[in-house]
Image 1 (cartoon, rainbow, N blue to C red):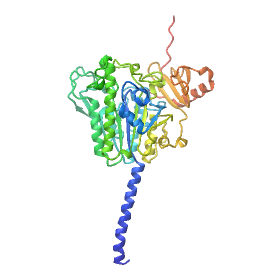
Image 2: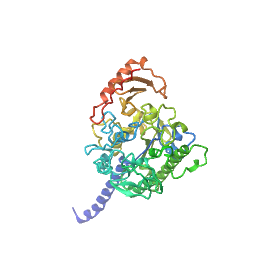
Image 3: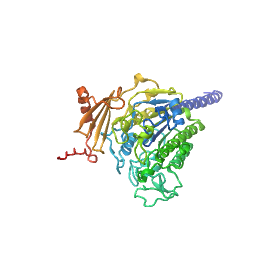
Image 4: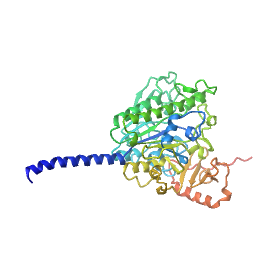
Length: 470
């Protein structure tokens, strides 16, 4: 090769290399979108305007719904906090999840989480808010479960207190200016001096983290604590710095506090969307918004005040749909058709397979998780369906539930109780038990419950209570 030809060829090769790198980058951007998963605490199916809420306004969340997809048959992993978060992070339902109820349990080093999966795919990973499935000094803390950075609450009792004396940053306590007399061993209690509102600190940290990582693919798990109540505060448990536009309403204080929390949450969803646009990453960021379980009757507030469960029966700690069917909004500009409503039946455990699909990596084999990316992209005919969804609950005498097509089946207590069958396509409020009319559905549900429940030394099935002699 002559020197002249080489001189001509080198710039061409450099141009081709640059083009190849540019193409690779664009493909990476296409196949690895930023993933923002927002899970709030105790928000009901009927608490958003896009799901029928009339009294408490949620304009920013309603805009997310208008610009994306609204799911009408999406479920939480559990009807209470810790197991719901375990299902979300591991993609295993409550028949096989390691953490199946509230307590002080910790994820193990062997557990595969969504964060570990995405970190292996090159994502920056951050969690801000409430963790609940790994406590101080354990192998279950977020930074040992795949997250680069964590700021918030590890312990769910600590998370009751919105004015705590400390929060956790990467496993270490960060002192706040609040004063909590008679503080519990986990940081729970009621503050006498209220300066630092944890939700605001968590939200600010999350936005700063996005500022620092926005140039590479990232996974943000934003697990906000509102509108949960401070259970230790009794009827004054709806802790919020101000009541917003509801301060002058002629409502009970807990109702105004709850509405003030929703207002603050909605405002901050607007801040997050604005931040994505500021960094020019709006079109390559998929945002998912949901709740960890149904609405509460705590902190002096009643779910019925604002019809927080909408048309559904039950609330938090129920396996009727009011306890587990939750809002799910997904926004991805240019990919999801705006203003779409979808009746795909999914649950938060599907994040594992969905995240793997989005990141272009294989999900773990041993999971109860199906990617709903085809639904998001409008390919409903290509969407795989769950054979059924399964839940179990160890409080309140215990219960099991199955969602199988249009059928919802509940057994109380677990393993031995009577079966209730509802056709939720016609009876969304689960009012009419038609078990006697459908023995074939009862048989299928019993088989599914038996198939799903894997015995656990930690989570023993409660023995049936003996009836008292009259």
